[in-house]
View 1 (cartoon, rainbow, N blue to C red):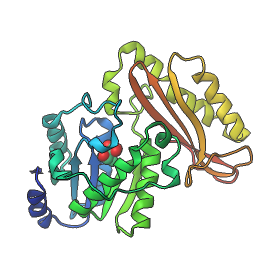
View 2 (view 1 turned 90 degrees about the horizontal axis):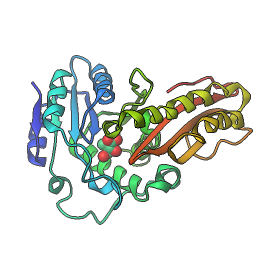
View 3 (view 1 turned 180 degrees about the horizontal axis):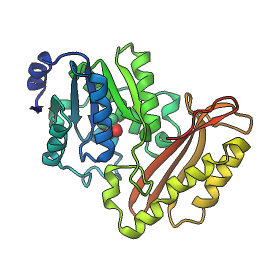
View 4 (view 1 turned 45 degrees about the vertical axis):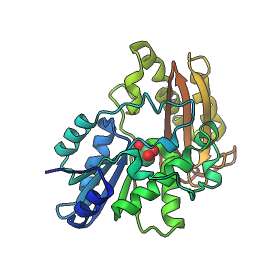
Length: 287
Ligand code: PAF
């Protein structure tokens, strides 16, 4: 049976009874098929003896003043049902005051890789994400945490934070879950009308077109993706090819593992997506 804790005290009491390894899946709720695949991966890692813990918390500190904090979907009953179906041991679903009894005076600085791409278009976003993830790690004390490859920059920064601060949490990526039409699963997809969804599909299509040019080099990859995005009726925040470790631009001579990333607004919905592209001897490719 899935336990539910809403206060730090309840969490501490329930956490004491969990068997190792404890595998954490941090979420903002509105759980969908992408989260289900995170839960299934977490459950595989936990094995028969371990425990999966899910946090459900819409973190105000990672939303900018003009972003969708108020309209972000909140579907706790459905989320708890999905967690129960997936055999989650414990859900921590706190109110804002449990996580931020007061505004924190010390926050996490995401460093240079947090200033570009999502960090540039959403100032303060990664500081907010890393601060809450650090708090959730401290409260749930996991051995392992799983994060989706769809939020590639978040995944890289959380992994870096765990290493740099010696948190002892192994951060494991889970491939992007795609709906049958190719759109990456996201809590925000529910805002898309039918016509907008058709436009949104330009994102994965452009990424695949770029990936198909990998043998021709970085410039060809970018050009192929751009050729599909430019005419589409969307507002492109960025299309970028970066070193998967540092998030520095992958120029014409780049070899190794890169990420081709895109962020765009379709109507009033902002979407992100990415694929892994290997250049030179590196052959790692896909999502
Ligand atoms: O990816 C998310 O859902 C959030 O950014 C996270 C990691 C739960 C932190 O609020």
